[in-house]
Image (cartoon, rainbow, N blue to C red; front, side, top):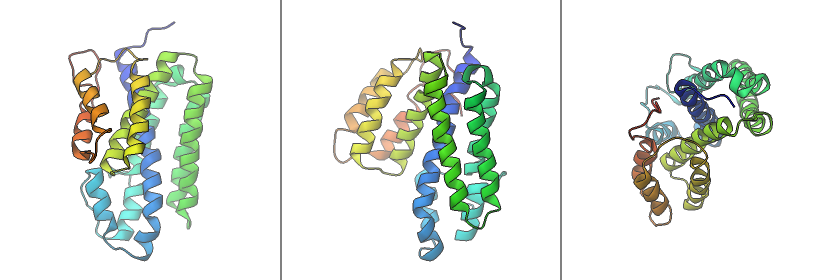
Length: 230
């Protein structure tokens, strides 16, 4: 079995995070779309605050367009999808051409959505292709190490986003259980005290969401050879 380089381990982790970021932020965006169009002018301001991104948008129409599709906005869904794509291209040998093709199809669907009169339909195609990519990760990648690192990034990102969006405790409990299983299947070193604290917090009410975000983001800040920088 080939040994993964530090760089490729890092890229696999961020491929998992970026693909999850696209998937989950698109789901949140779709839920908010009707209210943004029809009712609440400032819904996007609260959305930005929870995501911890600067509100650089001048109107709800500007937010809908730029947050989804702006290539120059580092926080846009498009920018995060392209980060996933850039990592996937480098990792072609590790993930295989078919898994890569679903990331490419997601980019294609995103570009179609930008010019569509019904963008939510095409954005759903982006979501569907991300899901298909994860299916290929499980079905077509022989290396358990590769699968586990991608899935580790996916779980970390989902917990981060769920905490930022203040999801219900049962959702966070389920994701923490999955993270606990996944983290043991990789060679990544992590802060055991922070993992224990994260598990403790999801069992208590109220949940301290801001603390969860801080601790999940710094879970791998230990002395090791993993380069976990965004």
